[in-house]
Length: 292
Image (cartoon, rainbow, N blue to C red):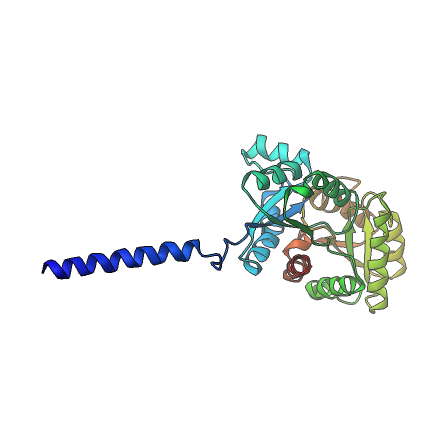
């Protein structure tokens, strides 16, 4: 009995020593680098739309890249402050998100914006991140929604498929974008050209704050001989612009303007981020960044 116990003890000691040796071996696999994927959005104070758009994009990215810790940052400090005061919801701005990544020991970062284009918001995001780039082993950037010719073609395919049920004779389908003084505003004209070249003659794109303006779109719709207009936001979220500037009852809203011109008007409060195809595009852009 005593010899049996002694033998068992020796075997356990041997196993322990072998495990220590394996851990100390120079050939042992090193710990995997800590990786994070930061999804940067303008943000919105409309909770339902935020969950259905930004939240849906983040969930799609999380499902596609399970090895990454997916995090959120907003670029609009006004929205961040409003959500904290109104709902007690705390969301990092870009600088705060970068500081948190450093504090958490993240080594590899992929930044994926949910911006439609490389406009001012994208420029400000890049400027905010620049001072932190040397704090990580690697930092890579995914592209906004519309960049390559393939992106434009894919967005045209997605939005025409998503709106197919409205695409009837005598109906103009009008997308309202934000618009910007940035050179990236040319994105809207290029997307319109892709729609027109694709045979979607009753699809029109305008902007709230730049060109094409509401007046420009109104003239085009009149020339199309449409009697009905369907309004939709060309924005990732259906927030303030979609609910008020587009679909509001105020005299300066797009809905009111078209009604006053004699059109039957329907409004669809659905941000681009709700479309599965758009979510897929952001997943693909993040994947392209990871593969760099």
